[in-house]
Image (cartoon, rainbow, N blue to C red; front, side, top):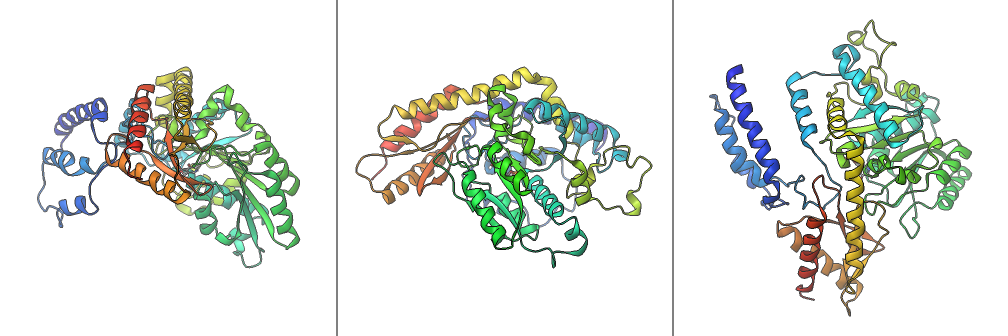
Length: 472
Ligand SMILES: Cc1ncc(COP(=O)(O)O)c(C=O)c1O
C-alpha cells in the first residue's frame, strides 16, 4: 500500500470510526452469532493475490461486525467496562503509526520518560504515597502475577529465582472468597500452587474479615508454613466490596507479609477525594494495581502497577543478555525489567491524551456521575416489592434479583438466570451475573463511558417488565 493509497484509505477509515462512535447505540449490545459462524465465513486459505482494502472493509462490515459485542454501547452494563474515548483512540492511532517497540529507554526514550511521568500523574491523582513508582502493564492479571513473584522472592531472600523452590518451604498466599480469579492463576504460575492459596470467608458486606485473615496466618505458622503475600481488593469483581486496607496492613506488618492491593476497577474512583477512605492504610501497601482500561476512558490495554520499592521488582525480573546492554543502563528506567514481557507497547501516550484532553476536572465529573446513577438505580429497584438489592452499592455496581412471592430458592435462581438470558438475547442491554450466598444475582454496572440516567431508566423498565412476564 503506497502512501497516497494509505492516506485515502485512512481518511475513509476515520469516517468509518466516527460513524461507529456516533451510531454505536444502534448495534445489538451483545453479539448473537452462533459458535463457528464467523470461522466458517472466512476462507480456509489465505489469498495468493493482493486484495483491495475496500474488499477488506466490506468483509469487516459483513463478516466481523455481526460478531462484535459492543462494549462502547452505553447499554453495556455487563462485567466491568472496557471504556474507550476519542482521545484514547487517536493516541492509539499514533502508537500504531510509530510502531515503536519500547522495551528499553534507548528503543524510544520518549516512551520511557512519558511512562515515568504518567505514572507520577496517576499516582498523585489517586492519592498513593509519594514513594510509589509505577509501570504500565498489559493487564491486572500480569501485574498481580508480578506482585506475587516479587513477594515470593522477597520472602525467600531471592533464592527461588536462583535455586528453584526445592528448599524454599511451603509459601502461602491469602485473599478473600470474593477475590478475582487472576490471583488463582498467579499462584498456579508462580509455583506456589493453588492449594496454598487460602481464601478467607467474607463479612456480610462481602469484604475480607481481618480476624479470619489473622487466624489463618497463625494456624499456618503453627504448621510450619510460610505466609508470603496477602491480596486485598478495593472493589471486588462481584459487588465492588472494599477490603479494609488499614486492618489488613497492620496484620501484614506484624507478620512481615507482602500486601498487594487489587483495585482494578475501583482504582479510578480514587481520583475522587470523597472515595479516598478506600485507601486508608496505604502506608502498609507494597504493591497496587488499577486499570485505566476499565473505567478511566483509556482503551484496552493499559494497567497501572505501582510498587513501594522498585528495586525489589527489578531484582525479581531483571536479566541482562549481551544484546540488551546499553550505555544508559542505571541512569534511566528500562521497563523491560519491571515485568514479564521484554517487548512493550507505547501505552503511556493514551494516558497522556486522555488526561490532557479531559483534564482531571472532567474525569472526576464523569466518574462522579456514574456513581450517582448507580445510587439512583438502587433507589428505583428498592421501590419495587418484587425485587431486592443483594449487596451494598459502593461505587458503580448494583447487585439485585427478581423475587416474586411464593418462589423457593432453586426456582428463584432459575428465574433470574432466565431473566438474564432473555434480557441479553434482546440485544438492547447486556448484563452479567454473580452468585452471592447461593443466590443468582444480576449485576448492573453503570460505568460505560457514555451511559446516562436515561439509559439506566430505560434498561430498568425493560428488566422490570421482562421479569414480570416470565413463566414461573
Ligand atoms: C478486581 C479485578 N481484578 C483483576 C481483574 C483482571 O483484570 P485484567 O483483565 O486486566 O487482567 C479484574 C477483571 O475484571 C477484576 O475485576
